[in-house]
Amino acid sequence: MELKKNDKIELFIDAVTSEGSGIGRYNGFAVFVRGTVPGDRISAHIIKVSKNYAVGIVDEILSASPERTESDCPVSNKCGGCSFRNMSYKEELKYKLSRVQDAVSRIGNIDFPVEKIIGAESLNHYRNKAQYPVFIENGNLTAGFYAYKSHRIIPCSHCLLQPAEFEKGIKAFSKWVKKNNITSFDEKTGRGLLRHIYFRKAFGTGEIMACAVVNANDIPDKEYLIGMLQQAFENLKSVVININKKNTNVILGSETKTLWGSEKICDILLGRKFVISPQSFYQVNHDQCEKLYSVAAEYADLKGNETVVDMYCGAGTIGLTLAGNCKRLVGIEIVPSAIENAKENAEINGIKNAEFICADAFEGAKQIEKMGLKPDLVIVDPPRKGCQKELFDVIENMGAGRIVYVSCDSATLARDLAVLKEKGWQLQHLCAVDMFPRTPHVEAVALIQNKIF
Image (tube, rainbow, N blue to C red; front, side, top):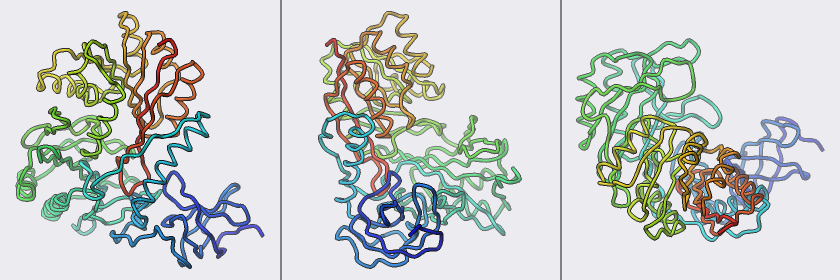
């Protein structure tokens, strides 16, 4: 029997997709159902059928998996953020470890065990950054998060992943919106002022930044908004607006103006101070980031006389935490403001052996190659799309001895490991780190050795 939309079927869930949906099979045909846990037997209502798979929603849990838990968030079944609120953390870690292992084995075609997964002690309130899309009607502000695979806003000012005080910031913005008849941005017309509300918190210092992302060069009644935010946040250090007039789904524009306080906040990570601007890349989970970077340092195994190249360095966080253990550090990053942050971070920490190049990873690596620099260690922490294949040619031509690869996507990590394997490089260590509890994302750190060493 072929599946059709609106069919009702029974399914046994035995796996999970990379986006956190449960997988069941109906006569061998894959059916994806959000909010299910391996071991669940369910009644499902089919809402979509394509050539290779179907999508269903839960009608009824006929028998629950032993690993099923009651979600502690009232909107987790609607919001696109958390996928694992109804799963035990033990099962979540098991899935994430298997996801990295499966990618390396299946995509990378590499027979190498993931040594372990480092779980989090805190599953809630760990994110140091929140970007809330907003909708305003009759002067009333709704802030929340997009529903799964849509731009429909699910109201949620009290998100369990965010610091609890961010909710006070939403209320401060709500008062300003109502007082000044502020409008929200409409993607269809390109009109309206307020697009997103954006908060950052430095967990090491407690400092908070509040940002309004707006479709204009300025905002009305700034002093009132600043006053409300000062009442909301005891440790408020920065109030800024980010200007984004483009009709795009990219959240931040290129220009930021400071309304009050500093244009940056300062955090402490592994004993180093780091300044964070609105557009800086900075790992969202402070405590797990320290664990992630500690694994990277363990794999780097620096003795003090090495030259280290830190590609995709952002504000310099990984490299600068290692700078005290190497002779020379060179960071490469394409975002100019991040490079300025990196230079400032080196200065405020008294680090004299670090320099930074503003370029994409490939062009920066070519510059280093022309300088005749031979790095002992290359650190790569690329975006989800992974590294350019040609980048590894340059790294190899420089005569680099080892690569520490920090990955936010195990599929592209596996692809890149396969490229390195073809070149004769050997995977030495591989560890998963759960940076994002209750969501489907997982980080990994790998150490890869050059064949000539």
